[in-house]
Image: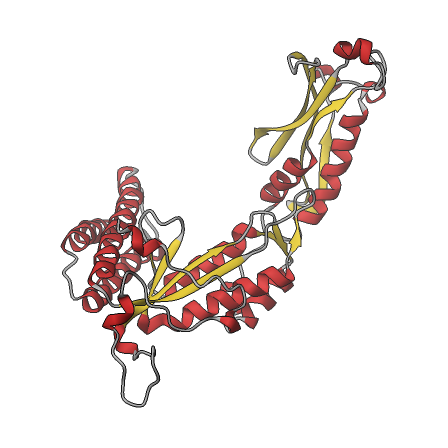
Length: 373
């Protein structure tokens, strides 16, 4: 990997302040053409390969469906098509449970008081934790620790899950307490356990109504797919957008800026500010090599993933729906189109990428032969 290709960015967080043209690499600007009538340092579009884009959206970002749709629309993207579904109840419960956990809380009574330094070693602490019991079900358990964080005891407190009425989630949490199975009675609950259950209920009501940062990143992923973007190998999340799709790079920056300005924080976490950066990439031989390498790596990874998924279905010896079978064929076709675009852009032959896609195409055709009624 050519390291010079990683030192690239105009770091403006405001898309309107984008610097426009940046020449990358040692003496890169020396090779730029200067069309007649243009000022010093300007360049025609034919010396650019495309745009490099990087973004960061924290997991702790929270957005209501209306807010996310507004952010998408403000970036001149199709909100109706790109806005994801709300999280399912199990996902909302997992996020709420993570926020409701309490760790290393002092247990009052029966041990050294907060100001009793002489008996500080006798102090006891509690961790109230939510563990996965089964799909969509969490188990509240409590660890009792000594001053050295050694676990002295471990007890079950409750099972919690989204409540359903007539097969539909009603937006609340079902708390099941089974004393006969070892759950402690209500009058023996620690304050930290009572608080954990109360917080879980409150946080669940918050989380079920909101998307997290992953949903915003899924929107960005779909935009990058439309832009025929390729992740640069070993770059830490940097993407290349071909010049024919450079308008998408601007839209990505606009969307991330909208997320930054509109988002809420998770119940117990403060989200890092969302950021995005882009820079035009000069047409230089060393950058063509980096992009060609990244294309081969990306297509190989995608083809192997498709082949694995299709092979698994073929081994099950079960009918496949026509919609699913056609979906695999379409994904292979799209990858082939992307490879052809990069071959023309970079003036290269992606031999290995095409070989991987040929294997994927054969698997897809075999899968179509298994389409059931």
